Structures are given as structure tokens and as C-alpha cells.
Length: 129
Image 1: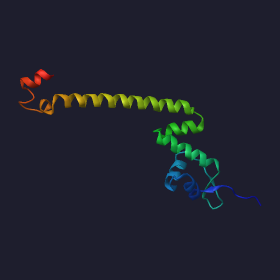
Image 2 (image 1 turned 90 degrees about the horizontal axis):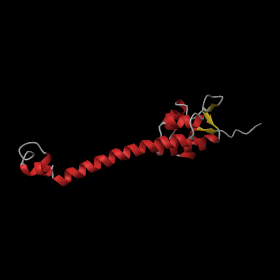
Image 3 (image 1 turned 120 degrees about the horizontal axis):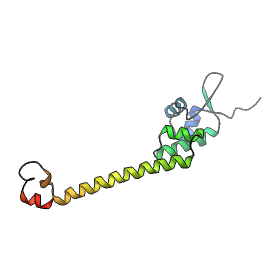
Image 4 (image 1 turned 180 degrees about the vertical axis):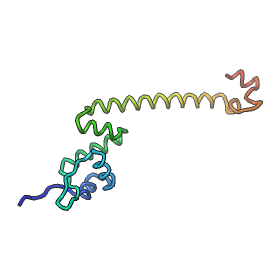
């Protein structure tokens, strides 16, 4: 008799810290490909532990499931996926830097110059613009 070394979904969840519900979702999305027991229960080989840990790391870095699936299936290299996510983060940082500078400019001018009404049109506010 051969020993079954596959993992049940609860065992995989315990080993990786990923909830059973999330593992089921990942199976439905094609991130994980379980086998099935004679009773129809999901069974995972030991490589699913490393695969799921990689998925968690990439999700933490902001990669979406389509990008992760592309990496796992070999359609895209890990380096390409990470570089694309870094470019997206760079764009977000640039937008945040602009927003921060704009907020600082408003602070420096004083809030009364930005409100509606007579105060905003006063000569003191026009001079500051």
C-alpha cells in the first residue's frame, strides 16, 4: 500500500496561514490545482505549500491574481510581473507627491484664501497667488 502524502485543504491552510475559504477561491481562479480524493475532497501535493506562499508574497506586494496566474503558468516571468508592479507603484507615488505638494501650497497660503466669498477675492489673497 502506498502512503498518501497529499494534504487536505485544512492542512494546507494550517501550514500556510491562508484561510480555507481563500484556498477554495484560489482553486476556483486557477491559482491552485488540487487533485480529488475518492470522496471528492480537494487534495494538494506538497508543492502547493510553496506555491501558496509565493502567491501570498506577491499579493502582499500588490500583484493582482491575473498577474500572479501569468507568473505561475509561465506566461510571464516573475521579473516582468514585479517590474510592472513597480512601475505602477512609481506612478502612484508621483501622484501622491503632486497631491502632497498641492496640499502644502494650500497650507502655506492659508485656508481663508481658498474659501468662497469675499475673503477669497480680497487683495491680500490675490497678492499671495
